[in-house]
Image 1 (spheres, rainbow, N blue to C red):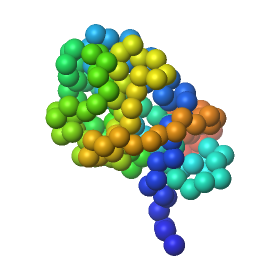
Image 2: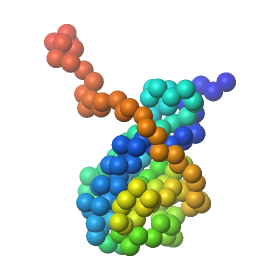
Image 3: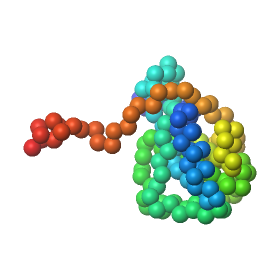
Image 4: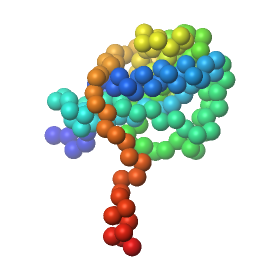
Length: 158
């Protein structure tokens, strides 16, 4: 019996992939980079145990150019929902470089998106840079609320 949620990644939400594709295109000709976060599949209405990638976390201060993107590691949160990374290759090459492999150490799935940034212009890899399958799932994403309290909660505290 497992006390923690399953670490198996079942797929990526269609809306999340759409966001990453659009962000990559908007960043072109520079690389785009973000971190992937997932939620328990059962909270999204699926009847299978595992996780679904639902968010792309963009780190403030990320610097990018046409051949690389650099994240200030001191700004990366230690997030239990983090499951990997996503970045673009403006040259369209859909395989990890040696530099990419050095960043694949944290997480189980890493997505590379290549120009021209269409639905077929991406591939997923494991932490060793080996291709892996990643289903695109049609799930209803919950509305994120930055603050999970109401004015009534504040008034009660005062």
